[in-house]
Image (tube, rainbow, N blue to C red; front, side, top):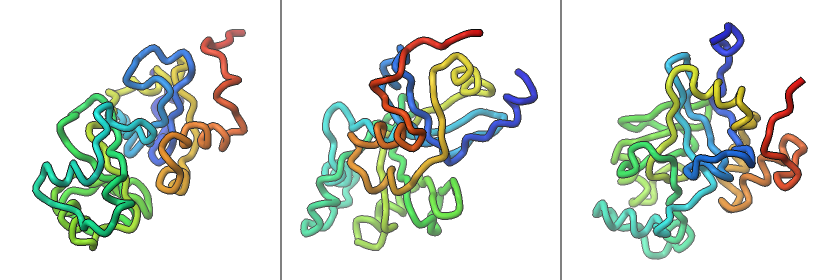
Length: 194
């Protein structure tokens, strides 16, 4: 790995899967990178609902924390497929960062929490103002993400939390491409070489 690859930090960036992405876990996905260090990277896919169509209401019922019935928007929010690692575990991406038992501070105003206390607060109507809940996450070992980017697997751009929290999940990849002035339909699935 080169010194340039070692210096890259894609924390708080989006990864957009290129059309040639063969891995079905990541095809046509938008991934938010929560941490990127020389030891590897952790991210959440933010535009792909769970195949079994799990809502927050059903997820919270499974962990014996019913959501308030009056909040239909929250109850009907899709739980997203965060990635193929630890699919039986929930991850809550949220703003503001707050003070929870197990939170990774991604950036100044965004946190990633895996502890039950955040779910309890959400169930009481006292949780963070913006949340995105996934089952599973995406992970890369040392140098793996840099290698995949070098092989034309991903495009990356600084993340927009408004795009991630405010747009419907199905519009997020197109909007992220728009941040770069690109249209997904116009991309080709092979890299050029000089």
